[in-house]
Every structure is written in C-alpha cells, then in structure tokens.
Amino acid sequence: MKKAVILLSGGLDSATTLAIARSQGYECYALSFDYGQRHSAELDAACRVAQNCGAIEHKIIRIGLGEFGGSALTDTRIAVPDSPQEGIPVTYVPARNTVFLAFALGWAEVLGSVDIFIGVNAVDYSGYPDCRPEYIEAFERLADLATKAGVEGSQFKVHAPLITLKKAEIIRIGTDLGVDYALTVSCYSADDEGRACGSCDSCRFRKTGFAEAGVGDPTRYKS
Amino acid sequence: MKKAVILLSGGLDSATTLAIARSQGYECYALSFDYGQRHSAELDAACRVAQNCGAIEHKIIRIGLGEFGGSALTDTRIAVPDSPQEGIPVTYVPARNTVFLAFALGWAEVLGSVDIFIGVNAVDYSGYPDCRPEYIEAFERLADLATKAGVEGSQFKVHAPLITLKKAEIIRIGTDLGVDYALTVSCYSADDEGRACGSCDSCRFRKTGFAEAGVGDPTRYKS
Image 1: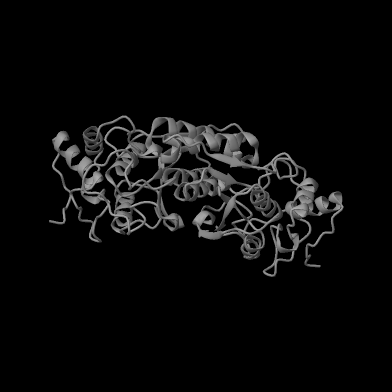
Image 2: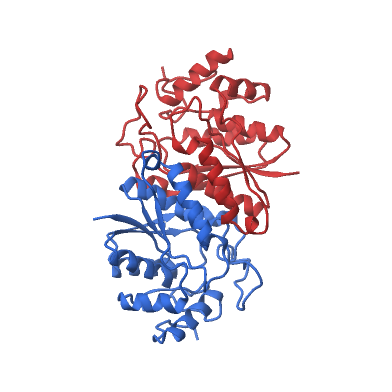
C-alpha cells in the first residue's frame, strides 16, 4: 500500500484532503504542528479528524514558529480582522507552509514515501502566497533536489487536490466521502471548546460554503 | 544597515559564514535549532560563536525534527560511521536544510530582510543533497513564491559563500576575519564538553583543512 504524509490542521480543508488521500488508496500518516497558534481547539480537532478519517499514525510536532511573531495567528497583540481586508491579511504567517512542507518532506523520506498531501486552496482563500499552484510546483522541484531519495531518482509529488475548488465543492466532496465536519474547527479565533467566531475570513468562507453546497452547517458558534 | 539571517550550527563553516556576513556590512540575526541532535555541545558552541562574531540577536528554535528518526545524527540507535562511506552517509538528516531555510525565511520576512546566509559546502563535504548549488537556487525561487514580500516584488537571496571553497580556504578566510575556531565544534559525536572524536566525516574534513591551511588546529580531541 502506498504511503502518504497528510498535513492536517484540524480545519475543513485538511480533513477533506485526508479523506481524498484515503479514497485514493494511500496509507495516511497525518502531520500537525503546535506552532504557537492562538488556540488549542485546532489541534484537538486534528486529533479527532485523524482518528475519524483513518490515519494510520498522527504526529504533532512542536515548533517555535510563533517566536518570530509577525502574524495575527501567532501574536496575540495583532488582532484577527472581523471583516475582509485589502491584499494579503495579517493572518498570513511568514513561511508557514514552507515550514510545514519541509517537515512533511522529512517524514515522507524516512517513511519511503514520495507523496505529500496539503489542503491549500486558491479560490475561496485569503490570498496567502503559499497556497498558489506555482508555489506548490516550486516546492516539488525543491524536494527532488533536497533529498537523498530525489538524488536517487524518486520524484516527490505534492498533492493539492482542493487547490482549484470552491469551498462548496470541497464540502460536497468531503460529505460524499463521509467526512464529519462537526469534528473540524476552521475559525482563527475559536474558543477552547472549538466554538467559532463566525466573522473571521476563515469562518466566512466556511459558512458561505455550507450554504452554497446545500449541506447543513454543523459549526458551533460562540453566540 | 541591511539585516540578514544567518544559520548557525556552532561548527566551523557557519562561524565563518557569520564572519563573512558581518564583513559585508550586514546586521546579523543568528538562528540555531535544537532538533534532537546527539549532543548539546553544538548549541553551546553556537551561543559562543554568535556572541564572539557580533550577531545582534541569536535565537535557538526547538523543533521536533528528531521525531522522524532516519539519521545517525538524530537517532542514537544508528551509529555515526568512523570511516568514509559510499554515497550519501547515514548522517544525512532528511530535509534538514529545507526545514532550517524555511524557518530562516520566516524570520527574514518578519525582520524585513531578504538575505539569508547558510554555510553549506559542496567540495569537502559528505555528499548531502541539500548542500549543492542547484538546491540553493531552487530554494531562492521557492522563497519568492512563498512569501508576501516575494509577491510584493522582493527577491530573496540565499548566500552560500563557502559553497565552492575547499575546507582549507574556508579556514584561511575565517582566520583573516578573526574567527576563533577554538569556540567551534564540528564533530558529530562530540562529548558534552565539546571534545571531538577525530574520526567522523566532519572531524576528518576539519583536521585535513587545518593542516592544508597551515593554521594551528585548536580542536580539543577526546584522547
């Protein structure tokens, strides 16, 4: 059975990505990070999703990415905006997906796998640069040059199955695959019980997605 | 004054790299990692070198890279070879430089810097894939696509000033710049006091380098 490393945040997109990887016959190794994010509800959700969606193993790696600051998601002095922003918003975490993919690459190589799955999306998204197809392709080229496996002829594939989908399409695909979205937390400002604010970028995309998909929204909101 | 992030391991090469960056007029932000390496002498050395070579700030980021295993440098069940190996040796740590450069990129972006220095070398080295010029160039292209700064037109530069030098040349340049190599630890199997084994790959390159450079070797050996 082919092995794959799946980046799992505990949100809607990565849960769907894990379900897609499973449906494609991969033995899934889920990878999450404790990187100084604002709330722990995200990692609690990642644990539930890994179990529910059949990951064979789930690692949570503690990394000091928050020590650099510079993002509303890792620095509590910067407020999470509750309305859409011009350009790339302050919730952007510098080099976050590069750090995540680098760890995924390390684990994949140790596992003898060349397949990495990431739930990035470049349609209903916040404009983060490291969610675009050209970025993903550049990482694939880097991976082949970076590794012993690459030097020996392996070609790494960074699967981004959601990258061109609208949020409603993602929800429909996940629902068909049996994903229980009640387990997931997407909100940037969730409380410790995982209840969502309903107004941040991530909440807005999610709420509209469920409405457009015609699927009942299982999200628990704070009020 | 231009800012730069310098990857600093505590070894001979990265100490020289820091000295070169300083000599080029950069305000230097040194970055080290506690990644589950075999011994703490390396990080003690990094602290001494950061101070001695005039880094304006030194961060040590704790990362769980060792959790994946797969390398003699992070898994004590795999022995460090004491003679040259065929091909890429077991001291290779999967995706290590990709992880390190990803963090450096994140810090650089928060600092408003586009300059990252890394002490990789592709001459007197162990054949690690992530020390080659083509790898460094691929990371630069990735950095421009990965970041808000890149999207806004900045071009990142990964400086690898040692990449084509022989170990003896590195030592001569560093000596001219006033690097105190007695502060550095290169050995893969150093003891907690930083005394070197004298027989691992890293020790052999270092020892030969001092001899060829005609510079006294300040390395303290275990026996």
